[in-house]
Amino acid sequence: MPLLEINEAIADAVATYISHQVMPSDPTGDALHLAIASFHKCDFLLTWNCRHLANANKFGHIRRINTLLGFFVPTMATPLELLGESESP
Image (cartoon, rainbow, N blue to C red):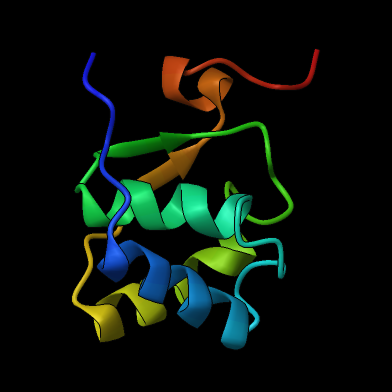
């Protein structure tokens, strides 16, 4: 599996997510994860992070920022959601 490039457009997206308070201010965390998946047009961004990424309340904000940036909007889900399984027993 190839490694995905991190370039200036991704760094700019990270700064935009943080400045618009869509993602926390740690530039190597959620904002970078989202920017890489969006820039490289990944169909899915799998995460256990339901606070910032796999969160229906955040999705509209992310979609607006990515549209502003001209970026793809990946489907954000937990691995269990992708497999069609419930997260609760």
